[in-house]
Amino acid sequence: MIKIKRTYLPITLLLFFSLIGFRNSLMARNGYRIQLKLTDRKDSMVYLAHYYGKGFPTVYKFDSAKLDKKGNAVFDKKEKIVGGIYMILPADRNSYFEFLLNDGDDISITATMDHLLGNVHYKNSPDNDDFLAYQSFLTKLSDKEKIFKEQLEKAKTKSDSDQIYDDAKILRTDINQYRSTYIKEHPNRVLSSIFGAMQTPDVPTGVHYKADGKTIDSDFAYHFYKSHYWDGFNFQDDRLIHSPILQQKLDEYFNRVVIQQEDSVIKEADRVLKKMRGTNDLFKFTLNWLSTNAQTTKVMGMDKVFVHLVENYYMKGDATWLSDEDLSKYIDRAKKIAPNVINNPAPALIADGFDKNEFKLYDFKAKYTLLIFYAADCGHCQHEIPLIDSVYKAELKAKGVRVIAFNVEKNEKQWQDFISKNHIEEWKNVWDPNYKSRYWALYDTQLVPAIYLLDEEKIIRGKKLDHSNIGKVIDFLERKNKRD
Image 1 (cartoon, rainbow, N blue to C red):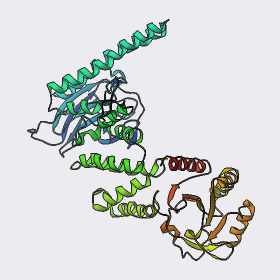
Image 2 (cartoon, rainbow, N blue to C red):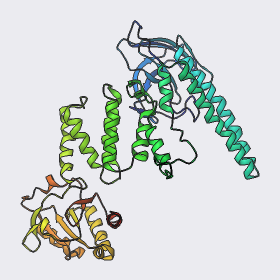
Image 3 (cartoon, rainbow, N blue to C red):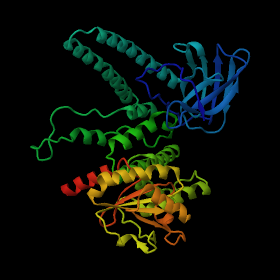
Image 4 (tube, one colour):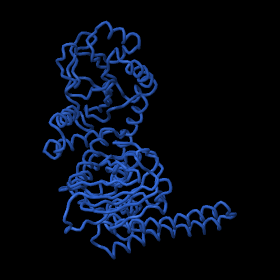
């Protein structure tokens, strides 16, 4: 993996996704042969690189060659490759250019790295001829866009501005028309598949009604956009992995289009992964992305998505690229999360109270229970616990909240000093010095403080909380209970 400086052949802001050529199934050889000539580089290394599911600033080295004294080099590989968007990257990494490479290609490229625009030429590569034609088309539109911006700066009235905006919309129409025409003329080309994948749903304007024909459907635009979001995307074309398109599509769909509720995300994740069955890189990248997104998102409750993915894909042999050691890490992590996902009953917990009496979680009565796992010698806990106590006294107590503070360390004096120093005697303070409760297997305490919000029935309603959002979660639950 390498990072490169972003000085490159401009494809304009309208060409975020490049194009992938169509491989003739009758080609006699696998791999590729690229005869390269750089007119302003010599006696240095040059690299063949590609994207992997996402765009800048990260690309991946794939092959390397040495430029001779005349700037000539040859890339030659016999093994089968996954085609897509590749790039030529000189050793100085100050510039680069993209091109289309297919399995079996034997092409020649001449380029001037310091003056790329109009100075990249191909031989024996119809796909790159199409690429250049599309690039030229977008460059012309970019020139028109600059004119519109200049006119907008000089506009004196709203009427003038509105007219300029209307004229500018024609640019997008022209791009869509170009792609649509190409798709119609070349329905079986991968280029057509790429154009389809680049499309965004064009939501019909006007008033729309529900099935009864009388009630206005205020959610029409959302449902239309969501249901047509993946139209034209070729879920079976692995060459899409060597483009910036996939991660961008996944991020928008799962983090901004799909309702941020765990069951909705699970349903859509299963649907997309099912369509990618049979591919290698697309399925792998998407499963990895969904798993990482579920673990790193700030949306509460998405750990249920992670558990679902592990149980239904990783544990069923779909993650064939993982070593046994790495696979076990996914499984172990899911096992720690599974018992304590949101909307599940809180696992039963037995511990020793500060008063020397046995404590049982389900004997603790409260409208809402704030269950906090902490370590008395943890710096973050020492910072967060007083803040939680302030919020508790200011507003949470009045909302029916009671607090259980579970110390996970064994130093009794340190624990007692912590309680006294932070004036949390009003809380129910417990610990488990003999580890009889197995709290670490029942609750996700990998990082402390680990904070859970339980309702009156001890159902988990919130987790991974802090002093700033506990009250907001309770207010949300109260509003939801009133609606229900």
